[in-house]
Length: 250
Image (cartoon, rainbow, N blue to C red; front, side, top):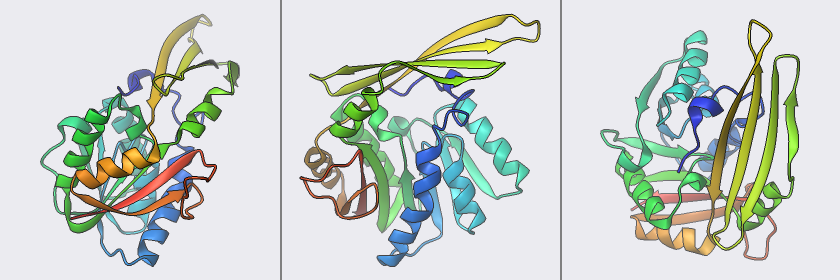
């Protein structure tokens, strides 16, 4: 299940957890447009701190941000409000999501690999499908097994250190279940110069790419593209840390 973002929200952007969405969002939209996607209504599911939303809203898309974490939504709202961008917000869990419809694109970045089973992913895909018009697109990413192993290979390390904040990371990998655990140990300086410690973790799971594609197809979509992280077509022999899947609602 998703990590404890009441804690992770306090370090999310500071340690670059927003980097993938920030980098890939403009490229994804450009790819979709070059391959005949048209639309203005976009729902960003698992929007986090809102980096994709900010880019979309700045480029005149009509955006709805959805996240289960009130802490992450508060961060996203503050930044968007400071830039006077027009965005709608929904605090909803993907597994229970409803009352969102008529969208031309559902974007779901760095989110779906937090679910713990194919059954949960199936529920997520079906709920996302309900947000979309017929013939419109779902675009999401998933770590590959290779990507999670590489993420784990960093071992234990000091992620961030200054005079007010210190973050240690510990990595563990369950090869049988293909699950990667990342533990965050956070030391934060207080106004009285004392330090407090917080612990949280993020657990990521993945599956063979073929299994994910088959599941998406069973959930009312037609997978149009399976891409590497550089947005070139993915082949089974390719080395890549993530795949990006583009599927059209049937």
